[in-house]
Length: 214
Image 1 (spheres, rainbow, N blue to C red):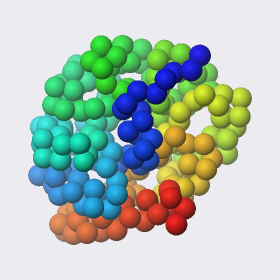
Image 2 (image 1 turned 180 degrees about the horizontal axis):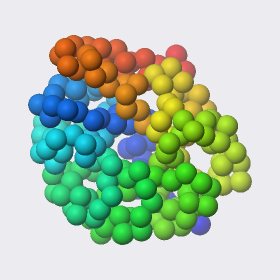
Image 3 (image 1 turned 180 degrees about the vertical axis):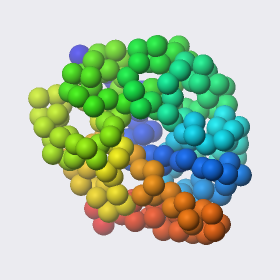
Image 4 (image 1 turned 90 degrees about the vertical axis):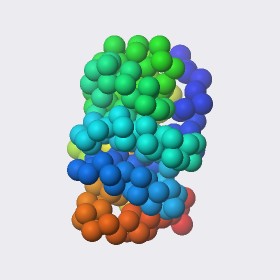
């Protein structure tokens, strides 16, 4: 079976890179998002390790509207999805595959991206309704794993998180990735602490150049 891509899945593909954001100070969220948008990265995943996660999502959704495609990360319970969607999240990302998360996301008409590792787990998530599957931790598997998975299972839309850098993102796409997810490689903690948000803009530009093959 093949899933017809939803509008949200198409947004993920077209925006090509997901910024996985874990902040110690939630007051930095709007500055970080603005800096990333200037550099061309507009899929913004706010993880639950960020204090006041739902308030941060609400702020980004209201301030940037459709310029930022905002979602929530590190989801493990349905209640988190409900709160995130109420705050304005357009998609939810989890480090695990859990049937109830997919069901809750479907009920609320948002995209769910479960985290999987093995071919069986990935295919099971797909058959349960996942349009896009986060392969995590991808740094343990590498690009060759994506090629190996996609050969017999070309219908899968896989997003690596972990192991993606500012300069190898394009190689991941060429290896079959639907889009890529980056955390620390993109979100420079020292730069944020020093309020030097221009560093994030330059990081984002480097990332997008890699994806576009420039």
